Image (tube, rainbow over the protein chains, first blue to last red):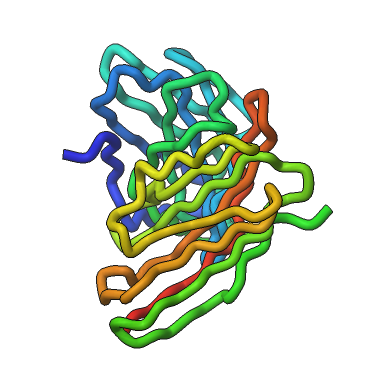
Length: 114
Length: 114
């Protein structure tokens, strides 16, 4: 079993809809949780990160972490065609997550239909 | 400034041949990572360099894989006697030494072993 599980999709939703992306994990040592966005033929770029349980909002994006359930989510409100990409969750055990190897989910391919 | 660059963008090779993949990190970044992204597998950590410390090689899948980082900057990932299962996108990332800085990813090298 993988340490991080993520539904690969593909997921297609109409423009303006709310998108929900999720990951589950098994390693209770994970403390920092990140969401990366990857456009086709590009490297991943960091969208958001959260520490421990709780919510974090940034514009149209909201990240949620439930450590008791080992479950994290990313919500995208008012989805736009430019949000079409692959979304990867990533996790690390330490605070210095810029300097630790990250454990990634497989990524969910999202398409927003105009 | 310039981001992480990788070369070549694409590489097609025959089974059994050796390949070298190059990564130029962002200037001033002391940490450098190699990941492998296979279809349906997500990003898999390979190796991590931090300053002058011994690299963390714990993710290298076999002794056919090796990497070096010269002068604390450019890194080369070498795969000897390539196999078809080595076909993947090889991503390089870099970051600052301290703080919760994100890892900045390059566009990757797409390797196809025939």
